[in-house]
Amino acid sequence: MSLEITEQKKKLAVILLSAGMDSAVCASVAAQEHALAFLHFQYGQKAAKKELACFYRLVDHFKPQKYLVVELPFFKIIGGSSLTSEEIEIPESSNTQEIPSTYVPFRNGVFLSLAVAWAEVIGAEKIFIGVNEIDFSGYPDCRNEFIKAFNQAANLGTKPETKIMIETPLIHLSKKEIVELGIKLNTPFHLTWSCYRETEKACGRCDSCQIRLKAFKEAGIEDPIEYA
Picture 1 (tube, one colour):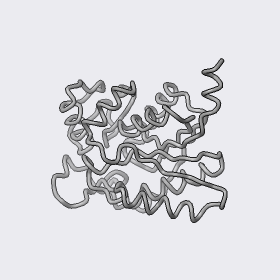
Picture 2 (cartoon, helix red, strand yellow):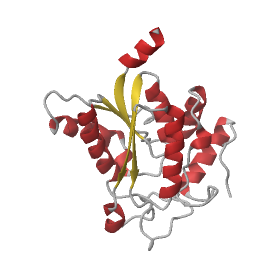
Picture 3 (cartoon, rainbow, N blue to C red):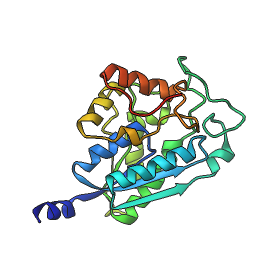
Picture 4 (cartoon, helix red, strand yellow):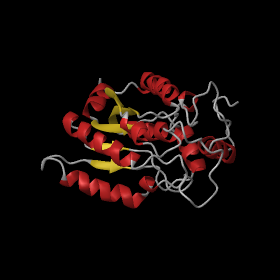
């Protein structure tokens, strides 16, 4: 009975859940002290169907109070990213200093805008996003300074009584540390999908797969998903 009361007293938090390893660990962190509301975007990404299937598996695992899937077809229309454009091939790696073609222009800005709108409607006080600026592909909208600026803008652009804080618990962790934290919190890594491609097994060659594989190897833990 006391456990039920404790669960009822947990304040609601919106979790941006792509179904990748980072967002799943982020959900595990948020679940320690918050009731969960999962938000997933289908934005024309090449791995959309796989990500959506994994999202629903994570919903079954975490059992959030609320969940919402939002379709954003305009990203594919705008183009400019190998994740959404059929004319641009997904690169095998991005070891250069340039921002890779997998960057979707201002994606996190759009995602967070919608998360703030939903959070204001459902009364959530926090938004969790699994951005990281240590082992990442160099996307400008994953940086801590961007999140801070966006958080300030969000509170200026909502009702005076609305108080929303964007939380980035993984922002300063290496990918190895993210894997270790996920293991500690029993994150269901076997239900996640990080590959940029829509294949039966993860390709193991794209930047996201390589970063993930390296993280599990450094942590001394076997990645539970299958690779081609």
